[in-house]
Each structure stands twice: as structure tokens, then as C-alpha cells.
Amino acid sequence: MSKDIGTLLREAREAQGISLEQAQVDTKIRQRYLKALEDGDYRLIPGEAYARGFLRSYAGYLGLDGLELVRRYREEQAPPAEEAPPVRKPAPARSPIRPVAALVGCLVLVAAMTYYFGVLPRHERAPEESPPPQEDVTPVLPVQPEPPPPVVPSPAPPSISREDVEDEVRYRVTGEFLQVTLELADACWLGVTVDGRRVMEQTLPVGKVQVFQASREISMRVGRPGSVFLSINGEELGLLFQDRATSPRTVIITLVE
Image (cartoon, rainbow, N blue to C red):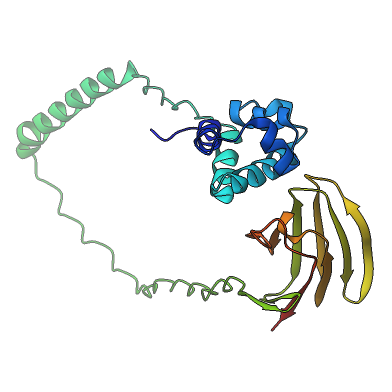
């Protein structure tokens, strides 16, 4: 059986000889939240976004796969599916009339056979009537079913490519829309421009989730790119940089055909 998330975090920290106090200093996450992650008591963490952000950041700090632990966290927090009770079909009720009807039918059949073979041969049987001429009936052709509608192939998933040029990070995205989600593992200053219009310029707190949509391009100046988790069109790409000490970067995300 695989270990739970809290056990993995605690064992990784203790194996490296790191105390919770030191981890608080290094990650800028309060010690009580770190202990809550190790104890699996997520009620002490203010909100789902904060829990996922803290978990990613703490796991990355300890050298663990933060995205995998967040995936397991989501599975653990998902409500169990309720199974519907099996539907029992009622047994068909037996009709008391059927045996009586069968008996009556048998008596009628015996009486008819007795009359036909016993009484009827004593008299001349009436000549059999010729069957009436059959009318010409135009055969009805079967109706041909309509052909099924053509199968429309589902669109291919978007393609996302990255290129680092000096202090710029450039993403090229194929698709019909552009949606960017940022999740902060630490406080970070952001300046965001959407389709040429400035929409944000402020410092956001740890755990903050921000979503931007554009028809052409999103440009961001990120003060602490090593603290920002990035998702484009629903696809999680992880941290912009694994090194928390990375200097500020300009991130340009462009929608291409």
C-alpha cells in the first residue's frame, strides 16, 4: 500500500534533517500549515487553493513531485460516488383464471372432435367451398433506414511550446481560445497585459489563484517566477522555474493558428 501524503512529506523532511522551523523560514509557509500538511489535517488550511499551493511548494522544497502529490490530494478530497441499490423486478402475479380457461378449452376441443368423427360422417358433408379469388396485392417494399450522420472527428488537443530568450519566456499555443491560470506558492508581484490592455499591476498573496482570458496574447512581468504555477487552457505546466531564486521574467503567451 502506498504511503499517504503527510507521511511522504514528514519522512522526506526528517531524512534531510530539516526542522519545521527551518522549513518555515525557507518556504515562507507558516509552521502550523506545514504541520497540517504532514498530519493530513487540511481543515486548518484556509481553502482548497491554499492547500494545493502549499502542498506543491512544500513538496518541491523537499525534492518531491509536487504535481503528483496535488493529483493524489484531489483524489483523496473527491466525494465518494454513491452506488444505487439494485432494482428488483416484481415477480409476475399468477392469474387463477388461466388453469380454468385451459380446462374449458380442452373440453371444447374433445367435444368438437367427437362431433366431427362420430356424428358428422352419418350425414353428407357439404361440398367444400372454393376459397375466394385472391386480390392482387402490391408488395410493400421495406423502408430503407436513413444513413447515420457523418462522424465529426473531435478537435486535436492544443499544442503548447516554450522558448526561453534571455529574460523572456515565450509560449506559443494552438487552439480556439487562450486561458491562463496562475497559482501562487508565495507572495509575488505581477504586471499583466491582455490583448494590449493593462489589466493588473500589484503584489498578490500566497495561495492566490488568478485567471486571464485573451483572444490573441497575454504578457506578464513576474517578480518571483519560481513561485508561480502556470496552467494554459486547462493543462498544468507546473512552476515557471524550479529555482525559487530566479530573477524577474517577462512571460509572453501567444495564440497561433
